[in-house]
Length: 347
Ligand SMILES: Nc1ncnc2c1ncn2[C@@H]1O[C@H](COP(=O)(O)OP(=O)(O)OP(=O)(O)O)[C@@H](O)[C@H]1O
Ligand SMILES: [Mg+2]
Image (cartoon, rainbow, N blue to C red):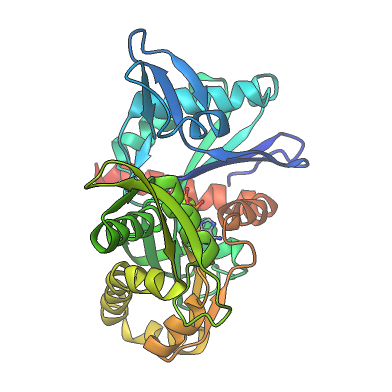
C-alpha cells in the first residue's frame, strides 16, 4: 500500500485561469497572485509574473507580450505554464525542500493527459519526489466541506475565471463532469459588450471586472449604488464617463448565467437515478471566484428549487481541499496510483 512519510513536505498548486495559489504544509498559503505573465517580445524572456504582470495589462506597447498560460480551462501556452511554475517555486524558495516533497497540482478538467504529463514533468524536473495531478473540482468539493469518500452524490459547481466546472461526485470519484468556457472573465466581457452597445463607450477589461465586483448582482439591489466607469467613446474617440446601475449589470450577466444553468440541468438529466435522490437531499455546492456575485444562491435556488451552499472562501476552495487532502494523503495516494495503473493498462 502507498504510504507517505509525514515528515516530508506537502505542496499544493492551484493553477487557475485567473489566479495561481501555492500552499505549503505546515505554513499555509505562500503564493497567491494572478496567473499573468509578461514577456519581452524580442527576446521572449519573462519580464514580470503575477501581480506585477497583471498591473501591466492594457498598459503596454508592442515590446511586451501578455500571456496567461491557461485560457478557457486548457493550457494555451505550455512554455508559459512551465515558466510560471518555475518562477513560483523559485520565488517561494521551494527548490531546497522540493526533493522531499509531494506536490499536488490542481488542474481544470479540460487539461489533457498529455498536458498533465508535461506539467508533472516540469515539477519532477525541479526535483519533486512525487507529483499528483488532481481535478480542481474534486479538491473544491473537499474544500467546500463535502466528505467525498462517502457513497452519496454531490453536485459541485466551480465558477472560476475561465471555466465553470460542474461535477457529480460520489465515493471519492467524479461520476460525471461537464465544463463550459463561461465564467468570470466572460462575465466581464458581457459587461463590456453591453456598455459598448448601450453607450458607444469602450471600457477596459479591468474596469469591467471592477464593475462586476462592486455592483454585480443576480438579484435586484436596492442600495441605489452606481458605478462611474471611464472609457473611450467609439464615435468621437474621446475619453468619456458612463454611470452604470446594478440592474444594467444584472441584465448583462443573465445571458452567461443562463448558459451555466442550462449545463447544470444537462448534468442533472444525466445523473444516475440512485444519485439523483442524493442531489435533492444535498443540494448544490458552489465555489470559485465567479460565485462571489451577489444573489447567486437565491438565483440558483429559484431556478432549481434546491438548497444552495456557498463554499466559505470561494477563491480558496481548491487550496482548502488540498489541506484536507494532506491529512489523508496516504489514502489519496493509493487512489491515484490505482487510477494511474488502470489508465496504464487501458493504454
Ligand atoms: N467579489 C467578486 N465578485 C465577482 N467576481 C469575483 C469577485 N472576486 C473575484 N471574482 C472573479 O473570480 C474569478 C477568479 O476566480 P478563481 O480564482 O476561482 O478562478 P481560477 O481558479 O483562476 O479560474 P479557473 O478555475 O477557471 O481556472 C475572476 O473572474 C474574478 O473576476
Ligand atoms: Mg479554479
